[in-house]
Image (tube, rainbow, N blue to C red; front, side, top):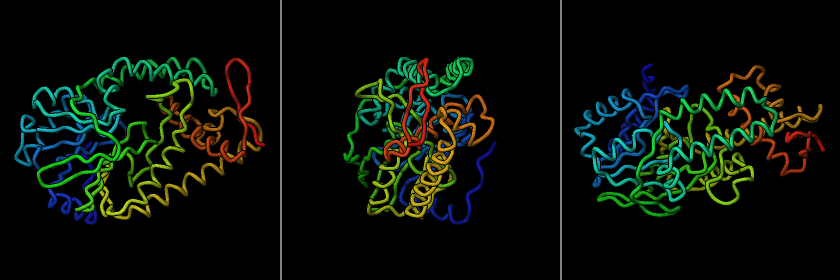
Length: 341
């Protein structure tokens, strides 16, 4: 499916970015989210932010898009990976091998990229444990693990030659991009801020046409047995971005650019408050597992969406737990339920 043509407003923002030497390369993915935006920074060194998934179709599209800007894969001098999701990193090894480019990633992300297979196995084991603990049947867990083993083929390991730290400056001949860690959608979400030009390369941290789902993900450092609080981390990241100065245009990882950043963030914050209130009302009617809450919210949940549904519910339950509005109770056999206080 072809990417939808941008609106006149979005086209104007794309042209503004292009005048600053930042070009969108819309690369197809096999996922429901549609095309992924890779961003070409036409400066010295010639830099690509994100790669698209590991597929021949994505590679062909990337080569065509680069050619439209007068470049080849072999011209790339730097590749930056924004976070650990496979639609953003799948072609990394191929591009790095063909170009010899420096590969940059957040220090927390680098071991994940280099140990892709082992990291995926650990992620799947964590997800299976979370699903069992929160009321998803073993049949669904087993089926989902089989699906993820197939889907991970769209990703691949890749080398990292330079690790980036939160707050570090990534220098070019004609600009400097500040690196900010914005966890929530994933533990490794990274944004690049060009304050002089008012541009924020936000990857999946901020999207306008949809909310970036805070996915329950295995912690990449610290206690791997503790359940991360993905939504709470994401809300903090959004507030940190809202307080930044010099963000005039957001260049996202999916969909069109936008320039009403504060409006988008404020609506996201309200959305999550509304959903938390709705979940609180459901739990007040009687104790439930997180998955039962999801079924109450959305009715039948497709197999492939079961873990995303669980992540969404648990993120909002964490808000309620923090406020003392609900409690977690042992339901036996390693399963927990949530009840109103």
